[in-house]
Length: 137
Image 1 (cartoon, rainbow, N blue to C red):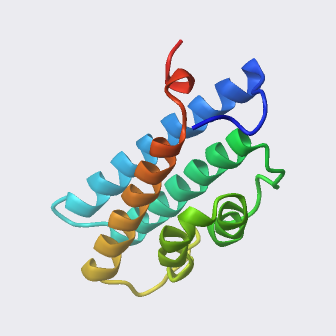
Image 2 (cartoon, one colour; image 1 turned 180 degrees about the horizontal axis):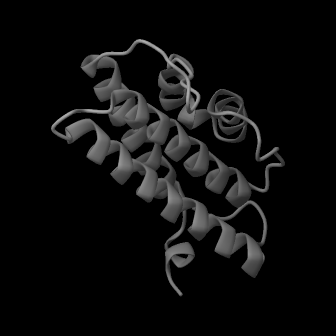
């Protein structure tokens, strides 16, 4: 994939940082989901954060302006605008219920599993669209 514009060293660092954070969030989601006493709400929160970070990395790569305070659904709209081929995965993200940190909400294992799978798909889809040189030193 060719870049839409020339990335600055700062943008390259930010993309790497966001993708690294996204993987950490996915790992935290798995730990919370598979713990002896599953923390489903925390797992969902970490997945949503991973999705946001993955989308932000992609939008920086595409040169798309956004507010870092935008939630995963708004970022999803930007991603669809930036790359219509991501519409299907964005539709899955848009169907998710927002679960803000430190709030009480009812969830179940099935919802948490669906959110984890969706977050992993988002991360994979973004990684596939980025050129290899972004991951090299």
